[in-house]
Image 1 (tube, rainbow, N blue to C red):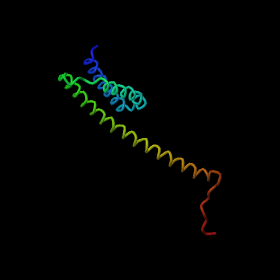
Image 2 (spheres, one colour):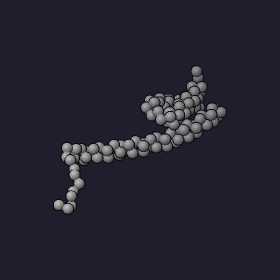
Image 3 (cartoon, one colour):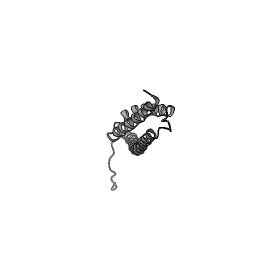
Image 4 (cartoon, rainbow, N blue to C red):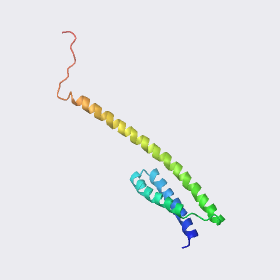
Length: 120
């Protein structure tokens, strides 16, 4: 495979992977998404080391179109990840509150609490 074709092949692979990662995020498959991020970074590094030649105008345009879609996918993915982080932050906050309540009320678990009789 020549350099031009391999450069464009890398761009297509990155585009496909960005769509896969976006789908995983939509499906809530966060662990799988993280596994794909390593491959994504490796592809970006490979593209940086093997750019499309500026003389190949058609290939540059095709790579540019793929890049636009990849960036759009990244922006959507970033929003989904932010939403997930917000959800996790809420869960952590709730867990902390539950622990505090359990600790506080646990101190009284051996006591029998009776209402006060104000008439005595």
